[in-house]
Image 1 (cartoon, one colour):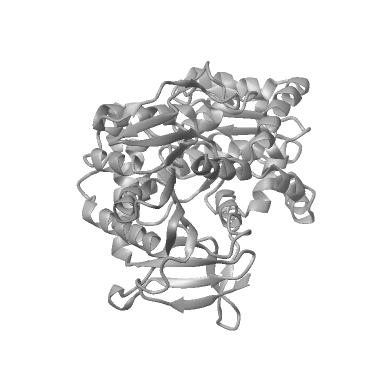
Image 2: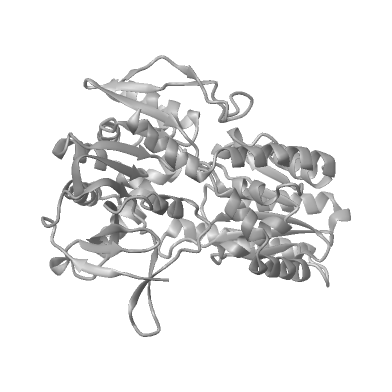
Length: 504
């Protein structure tokens, strides 16, 4: 834990002191309270490798700023809060006060009910009636203003994800000297799906104010380039072959070539396909640790018990394909009575935030399916499915990776999927099988995964059967390919590649 210094400041003070500014709605640490009642920062235990990597960008500078939000009860008496972080890196954390109503409208409604289904190509889930575009604009304006006030002349600003879509355009209008990079952590859909959004031109015009726009894989880059070309008239540069780190042909999201830049209103915008990496060295170190060994022993004695362990880890979301996976597992148990008592599925499915009806319905459906399957097939000494909605500590998740014979990751659509990469890192020299949806960004990076189509019963059934029966020699060969890919492009490489584009 870390003690921190609070400095309440108004918006017009101490401006222009940071040459590097990062905008991300999440804070770099979780806020807590010590036993003595002192406010402290607590390191996050989420398996999200992005936060510590972004935090590490400040290790070699003392004049950077991270801008996020904070929830307040009364906006009338709330100014931006500036916090001087001292360790493990020295930087300023600027937190923008938002009311519960603003957060609900901006994040849970407009972002999650309007943008999220369109980005993941689920247009039937799109909901516009509850969206309040004016609040979304207002929150983005608050972030943009804070960045402009913190930035030195010619500063670099790195903006993260779709809920801050409007920030780049707002910054450029006020401070054209600032260099802006934007990274899109979700998929970017094809043009006709993205065009569903009534605010499409405003969003595209803002993103085209950036100097660099980054996506996980070439398909999302191409989708964005086509949308910008067709909807607002941006000119596309000549296509280039994709980087060798991507599989270029053969599955749903492969792309052999991509657009390297766009021109819009006299400005050239670089496009970059650069998938977020994981931290294989950290995972290797954790596997050797006492706590992961202890978790592993517990998993063996309480769950595995000599059986083949299948792990699926995601969160409650209609895009994650948990219901389709459970139905495939049910069909497996119907076909293969010889597997009764010999295989167990661990479904780690983190519950969604309260108050989001669509996710509550999805969780209820998953729970009912898992209960029905256990009711049908359980024996006195065997329950086929273990189901958890709690947020599992990272050390425990690494233990599940190390113990799982099969990792079954089959979202209907996913921007990348770090779990797939982390499993490959954890299984170095051990074998194991990764069953992966070809609609995840990771499917064009991990040569060796058993790819499947979660929309097809036959393909799902064939994939899990292949995984269960795969010989150890083939497991080792496939896993070696995937581990090599994970180690060749880590989360640090991703951050360096993104920011280097601003300098080239």
